[in-house]
Amino acid sequence: MALRIWASSTANALKLSSSASKSHLSPAFSISRCFSSVLEGLKYANSHEWVKHEGSVATIGITDHAQDHLGEVVFVELPEENSSVSKEKSFGAVESVKATSEILSPISGEVIEVNTKLTESPGLINSSPYEDGWMIKIKPSSPAELEALMGPKEYTKFCEDEDAAH
Image 1 (tube, rainbow, N blue to C red):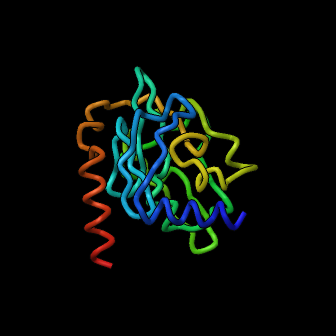
Image 2 (tube, rainbow, N blue to C red):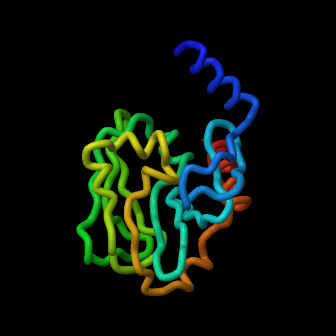
Image 3 (cartoon, rainbow, N blue to C red):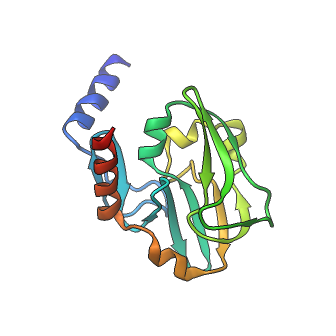
C-alpha cells in the first residue's frame, strides 16, 4: 500500500497520467496539471462541472479539479428523473468531509437518468469523476448552450488562474 501511495504521488508530481480507457466516457488522452485531470472531448463550466454530449444525451458530473478541492465525498443529493435542470441553477449538492457544495447545471434540459450508484458509493466521485462518478444524464433543451462552455485547454488555464489567485 505504501508503495502504491508513493507511486501515485510521484506520478502526480511528475504530471503523468494514464491513457487507459475504462469506458465510453474516456477519451484517448487527458491533460494533467498538478493533481487533477482535464479530459479531451468534454466541455467545462466555470463552476467546475463537465458535460459529455453524445447524440441527444448529455452526461454531467463534477470535474477532477472540483473533487480534489472538496476532499472525500460522503453524500450526494441528485434530482429525480423526469425533472428539469436549468443552466447555472442548482440541481443537487455534494457533501464532503470539508464542505457542502451546490452542483450547478452547465446546460438546461430534462433529466433522463440519475446515477443511483452514488447513493451507496458517493466516493465514486473521488475515484472516478469522469466515468463511474457521473451524476445525471439529460436531454438538452438548448444544445447551443454547449458552445458557451470551455474546452479542455481553456478550462485548464481557468483552473491554473483560479488556483494562483488563492
